[in-house]
Each structure stands twice: as structure tokens, then as C-alpha cells.
Image 1 (cartoon, rainbow, N blue to C red):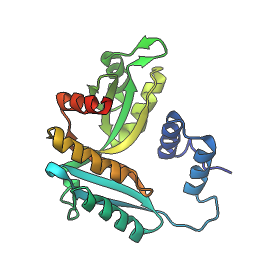
Image 2: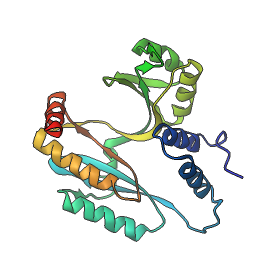
Image 3: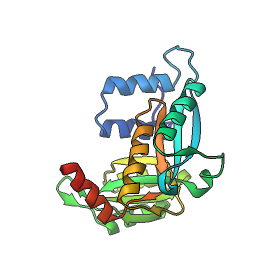
Image 4: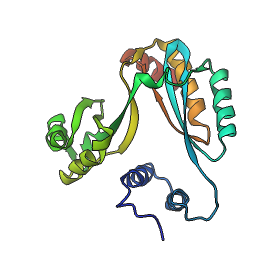
Length: 220
């Protein structure tokens, strides 16, 4: 018997996110069973957070889920040092972030355009603190404990969402130029490629003109 998704909002959101990213159902089912301890493997997974300073002083929080803490630590350390970063003392980076609920709502949905007012009207009473326009989507921020209520409010209003996660949101972002952006993104990619890494949070701010330059380089 599979774990009860309705009684586990975090697991529900993880499964929904995987489906939206077209992860095969058999992979999702296996992960759910493993997470619920139903595969009888006897493997204990633990969550570890690594704090990192990257190029241009950009801060990173690296969240790992691993059955081998020593392996995870070695792989994260290697990726960081090879890409211009340094591991930071516990607390020095995490103090720059706050745990928040983050929901991404696409503006174009099944032939209609969702407006900022639509999102605000649906979510404000449920605990939404901020709704920001991110070009083709809205980013809804709430307290971590209100994220499920906000997500449910969107569903009730027949507004679809791309993802609903509890994330570490920076209190202040660091703008970077093109050269620094390339280095920061290279470090982020190296970390995200590690098997044990679940999430990488950063306070980098890549201005629109810098992002446009990076896109031009990718097209060349």
C-alpha cells in the first residue's frame, strides 16, 4: 500500500511537481514508496544543508537528501572548490534566507490569461504575502505554514500552478554582471547535477540586460 498523499501535503506537492516535469510514473511510484519506507531496503535518508559562498559573494544554501553523509559532503565540497566557491560556517549563510512557501502560477492557462488581480483575489485571504510578476508567471510568497492553504485557494479558484514548494527565500539579492553571472550559474549547475542534492537556493540577482546577454551567447 502506498503512503497516503492526501494526509501528507509535502509529499502531495512533490508528486505534483514531478508530474508537471514529466517524470515517469514508475519513477514517482518508486520514490513515494522509498520515502514511505515501503521498499524494505532498510536505508536511512537524512536531510543536510550546506552553506556556501560563491563567486562575487553570492550566497548558496545546498539541500541534500542522502543515505551517505560522507559521500554527500565530499561531492559538495569538490563541486564548490572547483567552481570558485567556499564552504561557509554554519549560520553565516542561512541567516540571509527565510523559509517561505513559493508557488509559481503561469499567466497563460488553457486559452485564458490569468492576471495579478486574479491571483491576489484568490490567495490573499489564504495567507499570500506577495505576488510578483515574473514575465510569463506570477510568484506567490507566503509563510511556509500557509503554503498548502494558498495552493488550495488557487485550486478552488480554478487557477493552475506550475510548482508549490517550501523554499529558502533571500532577504536581499546580490546583482551581478555577466562574468560573475556565468561563474555563479556554473557553480549552481555543478551542485544541481549531484545525485544527493535536492535543491539549491541562492541570493543572486541577474539583471534583465545581463540575462539577455547570456541568452545571446547561448544562441551563438
